[in-house]
Length: 317
Ligand SMILES: Cc1cc2nc3c(=O)[nH]c(=O)nc-3n(C[C@H](O)[C@H](O)[C@H](O)COP(=O)(O)OP(=O)(O)OC[C@H]3O[C@@H](n4cnc5c(N)ncnc54)[C@H](O)[C@@H]3O)c2cc1C
Image (cartoon, rainbow, N blue to C red; front, side, top):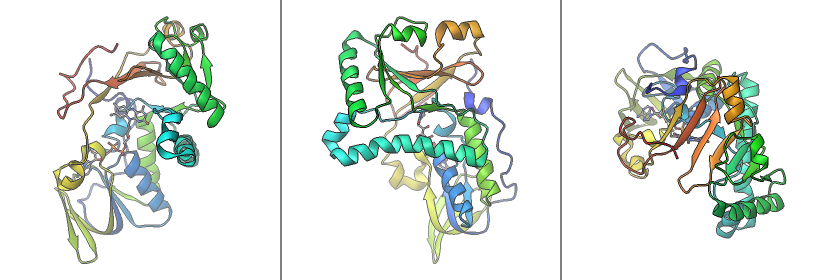
């Protein structure tokens, strides 16, 4: 077994990072080159702002280069639960935000000409137990009626065209969901930000952030820069340098694993529907095919503050 992210292992790394030490004066400095930081830097640079992007490791090193590769429409909680909690109009806005985010990513890919195998394959939420069918069917009906008529229910028989397995008892089909190659998207976003004029440093963890008269000074092992404003896009990788934010993060260990490329006969026998799939267990597992026909599985291994990819290995059920 190889302990490397599939997405990094199968994409060409970003080649536009600065070789010179960190220095200069900027209007905005973005810390962290995951999807959040990359798009912030890209958009700012595109609108003429002098922006620096500083990454501790390399572009896409964090969750953006290690995830399941699903761009799923709708949220995990039912529409009814969101409506009960937030009211009708907020629940609709929340639901549509998921659809809009996929549309936005599709538009960026088109605009920046990023080759990342984006595809509207749809998602199936699979009933893992017979007792889950009724609840999922009711959820499907509610979504169709209230917010997205394109969603459909697939019976156990319909699933034969989707998966070479009798393990599931029906599924909700969300046709707007998409998939892409996350590593190629991240590197393409970095290339686009660079092209629009962002200055990008990799392998430069920000180790201090202090107030100066007209903004902030960010320090890294190679040097420092000053900036009017800072965008902190460090996600779960936030260090003690930003202790206020780090203390507000709850760790949830989560992993992906990819098989060798499957033959076309193996694809036809196991996953002919070629969509995003997720099951209905409380701690859900999910899977899809990669552009080179590997089966990529993901799931949550355990809830713990400490994560070690070797000791966390556990069979996916
Ligand atoms: C296993 C797994 C599967 C997932 N599957 C999906 C999925 O299928 N669909 C989906 O929509 N979402 C999924 N997610 C969630 C999604 O990947 C994340 O929400 C998203 O990538 C977060 O992007 P980000 O830019 O905010 O953070 P990240 O991509 O985590 O980037 C943060 C970056 O900040 C850098 N950094 C941290 N501290 C510093 C510092 N001091 N100085 C400089 N740089 C620093 C890190 O090195 C890192 O590169 C999954 C996540 C995981 C872990």
